[in-house]
Image 1: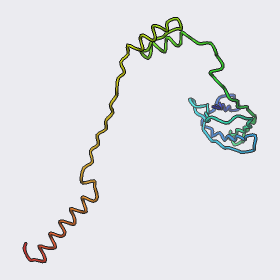
Image 2 (image 1 turned 30 degrees about the vertical axis):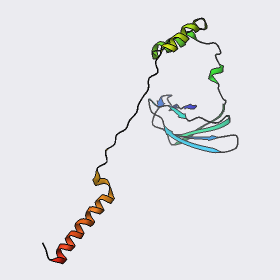
Image 3 (image 1 turned 180 degrees about the horizontal axis):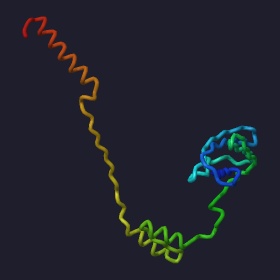
Image 4 (image 1 turned 120 degrees about the vertical axis):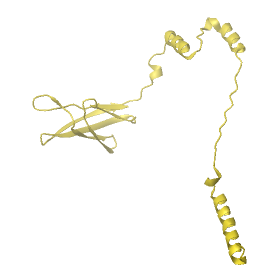
Length: 163
């Protein structure tokens, strides 16, 4: 994920908010993507979604005191494999996760205890059911059938004279 932090200052070096920031990002193939956002006291960061690996150039611009201010630069996006950063097992974290989720923590020395605990556990079956109520008035064919029957009865009564 790429995050841009924008800070706009006036001539007295006071931070100014409410400026519209136009951000253009160009990838190494020349494809340009444009973004627009407005800075606020709690929102000077603009987070973009995950981007593909590569070198990108950016150009950010805003209007300050009727003058266009522009900043340019480039950044590199590389893949990070978080799991390969720390290859040592964190037993403290594993114990904490087990306690927090109602589980148990076992080491390799406690393998017999693990197997006996697993055999004691009785598997629970889950039954899911779903009930729905659909009134007959919502069925169009029932409506038209009733309308047809009432219409035929009315026509027969009028035609035969029995009312």
